[in-house]
View (cartoon, rainbow, N blue to C red):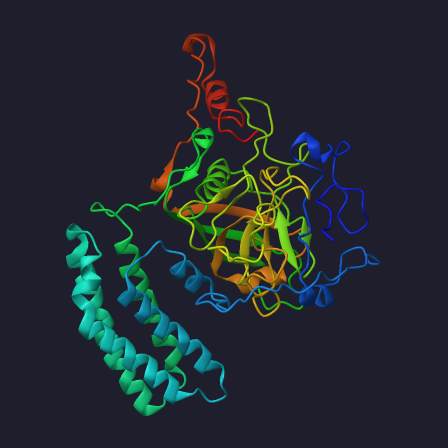
Length: 445
């Protein structure tokens, strides 16, 4: 069964602050959802509040094997989600990604590592021209330089294999995958180096904040009493988050807009139960972001792109349209997957409440859990994800900042012109500064 959103009166959810929560039909629902559990997760997760039973749903019947169905690394998922049609480049990526499986074998299975590196070298040698042709002419010199680095790195990898240097294998693997990722990104950008989103969102969302590309966020959380929890930490937990506006432009744009408004700064972690970490419920009766101009709650449509589709699905879940067993481009595979929370029966009720999943694909494999296609994923924690497991209710988000990709924001609501200030002779300077820079003017109310 799907657990209640934050604020619902059910025992398994934290009690909401302020006035009685609105009904789901009112738009925002009653609080944050605890996402429904898959058959394996149901046995492993203890519900907060105790006593609540979890009924395991029937096992999905769809066949799952795909190139991404068991990929758990957040950076790998972001590489696979790029709208790239270059087969040679994808083959090199795939071969290098498979080394992760060899690393799971005690002592490293060097024969498999050697095969993957050799196949990558062969593809690069034979298909280099085709790889470069996929990159805009103005960016080919840059991409060619990256391929030179890749070629040199693969030769270095050969030496590491010969020396059976187990320590260096994962290091150089990730280094080379980073280079491959940069070439792939160049292939899906235009001549000026700007992201090319291969679709337009429906016209009714044109006035909403949208991220037309990707953005990187830095989040810092202050952990209360880290020593009492047995943590070897100064209490500062830092994470890097990548938002994917190539596949979820509206959800990602909503998050960037809220970050720019400093909406999450100073907000507490409101749920941390070993299954998810969540936040985003502001103080007061509202359970989501209230637009300071309209004084109304802002909600975003449900948004998920199914693998193979040109456009995302909007307003209906994959289950609603009879595609529950298909695979979303952004799956709940990685520890630290970021998604929108919403009312249980209102897919378009998401606003500012977000959650990070604390399980990986071994517990919730793609296509066989009740998260994929039912909750809108729009990003992943790419650095510092382990910190999520240390967070508890009451820890405070010190700040979230956009450190890269703000230029990819479009369709931002235009700010109303500020009212003309009173004559300077009759208003103290301090009061004018306060009027122009207060919470309402900054969009923080």
